[in-house]
Image 1 (cartoon, rainbow, N blue to C red):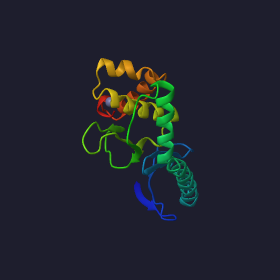
Image 2 (tube, rainbow, N blue to C red):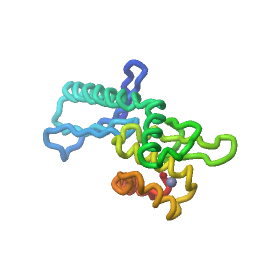
Image 3 (cartoon, helix red, strand yellow):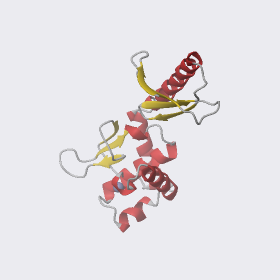
Image 4 (spheres, rainbow, N blue to C red):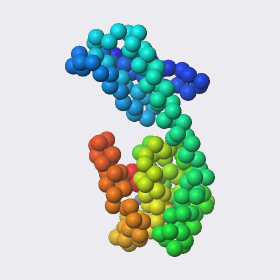
Length: 186
Ligand SMILES: [Zn+2]
């Protein structure tokens, strides 16, 4: 019924799971979940057509991935500087801000004190998220430079960032879908 396979293409493997679904009438459905693609196809679709569709889907995924990868560390630095100037009177300082691929749950983190003081890390899980949500995650970590905990003062300070409530709602919605608490993510 279900076959998972990895499509290799220019060292950019895409893991694909193809499922024949009797409930579907004519359309092929697919969803992209980070590293893998799940395709559901009606039983009646000939294998040759299905293979062709899967190849097109993999191409689409590779193009999206390329867009995501184009978000570079220097963009994060520029974004942080812009937010700092526009909303925090330029009063926040940090040492570095970069994308990292090793955060399993958290979307961002910020060190206070110690040898890595001022290192802000943003999870590359959110590289494909909307710009205004990425901006919020950056603003959130910047605000932690002033207020390490989620105190009332922290939220009051972060509310200087205009998109705060909307972006918090977005993060809470995604966390909810995963059965998790957004407070553990950011
Ligand atoms: Zn936080």
